[in-house]
Length: 158
Image 1: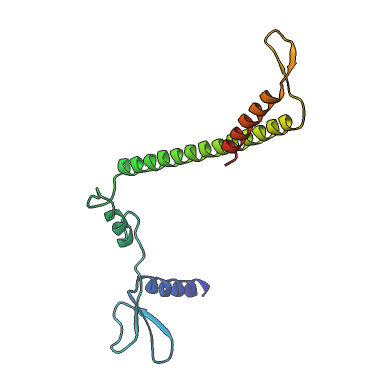
Image 2: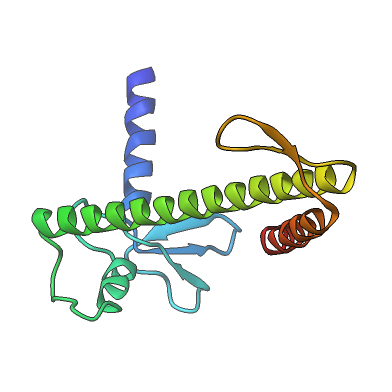
């Protein structure tokens, strides 16, 4: 009994799956079939897609490219397109990483130049000569160093 009920339900669903049209009958029940009755409000039922058969939307997308061919792409063409997309993505990642590194370098150089300027503005400035002796800058040299560091800070901190 249960097997017969399952068989009937399976056949009913199989019939609905193969139908091309859907409509509501006079009793308000939804019906499916290949030919609707005259005067019924009919909706088209999309047939199930079969593997390996391109759908119209996919074919339209392919036709947008400059060198589109008629028919589906071969495996080698799909592989070539995939590799091309991978290379473009790698280039984009490299560009982003380079831009990020440049931004980090600029930020770091800005902080260093501002720290050096604060150090020169806050007191006496000492340097070490080539022979290892320590010497202090006079006022004119300090002003030159301040001007140089202000310019560097302005360039790095834009």
